[in-house]
Image (cartoon, rainbow, N blue to C red; front, side, top):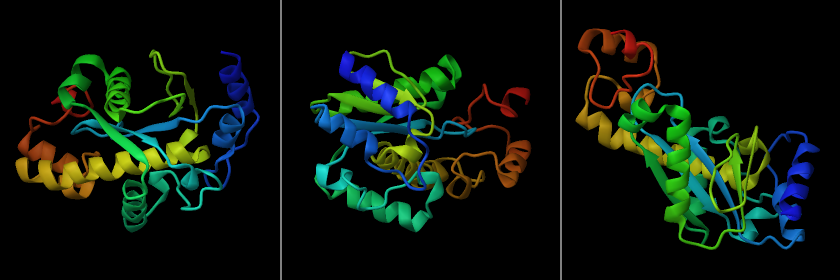
Length: 220
């Protein structure tokens, strides 16, 4: 599709801004593409738990000019992330979650499992989609999609998706898995390989939600 190729070329001309903006979305809107979805994941680099992806279709008043100051979730404080999470879910924007489990990660690998979680989030969105913007990944799906590096730092839609994915996964690790698998301090580390997490692994061994294909678990 010529319009999609033109948007891809436009993205290549952009520099990473100090704050994600709506330049890409506005370019798409000018081309007649109205239903724009951003996708990002959380938990790709952890050693325990699922990878969680979010698809977000922002209402247009939250796109133009990035009035809510959405940013890559990793660059936000916990309090700011939660505030923006609530702004998104109460704004009338559409959003959904897709999950790939630790078992799927061990079976298919983290890259393919990330794609699985993203495809599930798209399926769960249940809305019209003209274009999907994705951080660093291209998906083999019927919907037009563009994957590009630093998308969560460039696109307001992808930045919003990163917030939804991060807050959702952090809540799962803190409220569910911390209680199911105590002693690994999952509420604090969210499954990342912190010093205390590794010490707990050495002491207790791996739990059911640890990724057996990831180091250092695969060496135990």
